[in-house]
Image: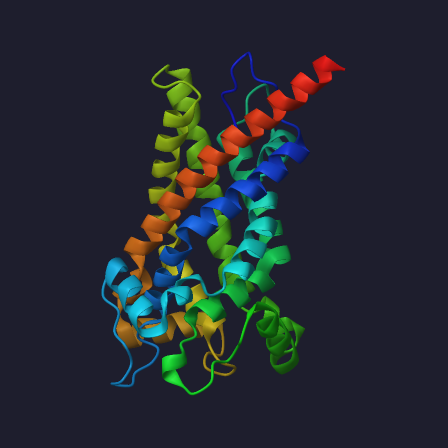
Amino acid sequence: MVGHTASDVPPTMAVKIFSAGVAACVADIITFPLDTAKVRLQIQGECLTSSAIRYKGVLGTIITLAKTEGPVKLYSGLPAGLQRQISFASLRIGLYDTVQEFFTTGKEASLGSKISAGLTTGGVAVFIGQPTEVVKVRLQAQSHLHGPKPRYTGTYNAYRIIATTEGLTGLWKGTTPNLTRNVIINCTELVTYDLMKEALVKNKLLADDVPCHFVSAVVAGFCTTVLSSPVDVVKTRFVNSSPGQYTSVPNCAMMMLTREGLSAFFKGFVPSFLRLGSWNIIMFVCFEQLKRELMKSRHTMDCAT
């Protein structure tokens, strides 16, 4: 990102990719219960039976899940989630600066080059990491309360069953809404964070350190949640659907609109913001500090030799 001080050693691409992957995994482990609560709130309304459990609010959803299905259920799909972060975050965040430089023609990166970098890295990350997203959502959404036997017993069992029953294309189900969602998230999150951090540092409001990274991450998280929520809900519903439930992504969106109204597109907004906001704070702070420390260690080792 922008705003390095003169004493900083510019991080290499390998350091950025490694730091982004590690920081994203740390953030995912801490905030995963919020993500599970978000998914459960987003799919609420699909099951129209009177016996279906109703979730109310973020804390209520987490407590209900823990009571009815056990605390471990809050981390159902975590292995797939970590696999997703390794592929998604490493590419979309780790390569952001490098791709931005490619699109930059002048001395300083323009808004256009930042957006182009966000579009490119976000798109590549989705195509590579979509199977991990499908498995993560399926495992988070399934409940043993709706049937005697769950669809999947674990992460790798889910990969195998989806591939055998729905074909390999089943692992890339929902790529279109997820691509749209991640393009919105990537552009909004990274560009907003970058612009906010640059403004704070250039105007000498905050130094390029943890407080600056914290404020920039919170602003980026809120802006991203507002813009991505409708697409995120449609993506979750479509990815979690059984074969034939929806004929297409637009059909899924139209059925949501006619059955549940416009408010359906913002289901799970609070946990989405809490999750994305806290995820952004943890990830960006860890990312910035980790890549800085790694480069300092490398510089120290180079000087010693």
